[in-house]
Length: 114
Length: 113
Image (cartoon, rainbow over all chains, first blue to last red; front, side, top):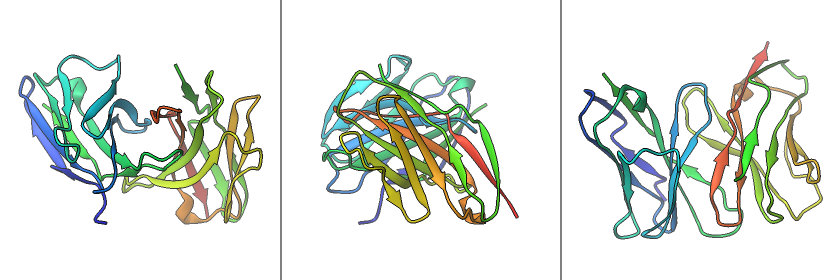
């Protein structure tokens, strides 16, 4: 069990560029979650997966955001045409699909849009 | 839709004293789970304690305990014998029956030596 890993740890991009983040969950975990967190705030739910199926996407999420989990293992989060307001920490977490199971979090990807 | 509210943006407590962090939530579900997570300056989220909604008994983990009031939809965290290492952001979280998990905005806890 190597934990949840996210890549890259930091990303600096210019406004208007596209960025993609990767998350590798704990291998036996079938639930995978994406959150966005700004400094001093709580994690904001973006989307989650059961294996390769995307169960829900936040209604607050712009169409510029898309996430995939094509083989039910790793996941990618893409942001198109980035804006300065997208600057945040993007957290990935995974868990077993058992009632009440806790989330295991990655270290996050810090995005800065200039 | 479910919501989680933490009304205390910041709290301070003297080392070795007891502090209580508040959390309220709104839901129409009867079956759910509640959590408290700790996020130290390293920003790695750590589970502190978990409560099943169907259990009346309050969860306890060493110096951490909760006061779960289901009818009032209240879920407070009590930290006894506060230690310097307890300084962090604390987030209350709600896990619904379909496993969606939402967080409150957090309470920043300062420990005064």
